[in-house]
Length: 154
Image (cartoon, rainbow, N blue to C red; front, side, top):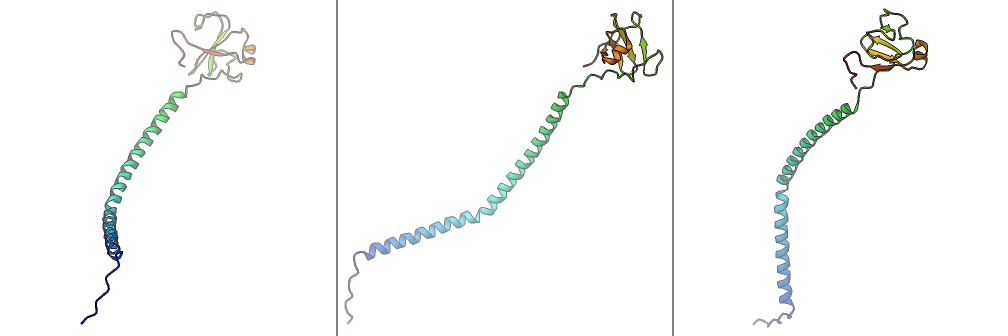
């Protein structure tokens, strides 16, 4: 005959049950984590494709911004008015190749006012309020004026 075994302590069965449940929970967690890990390459490819699309969109937006910046800068650059002629370039006699001196009161003057008017070929009319060429040159008093029937572009 076999000796009679001792009954198990009361706390053994709940411990075995709790241990079994903990083992099953761990196996379930491993299965879920493995499924997430197995799907990772697919997710990475999707994110890389989305990043490529976003990079393309950013490149396009950068090009558009650069174009508009150039347009804005061109609009901000107003052409400066031509510089008044320096004393060395102001003609002293009629028939000079750089321009023609017009005495005040002539019918060809674009501005019927006192002073000197001078036409520089390719540039246009200049006016000085003084009656003396030397004084106009020393004070740089020349200013652009429109010719007959014309206006000066800004």
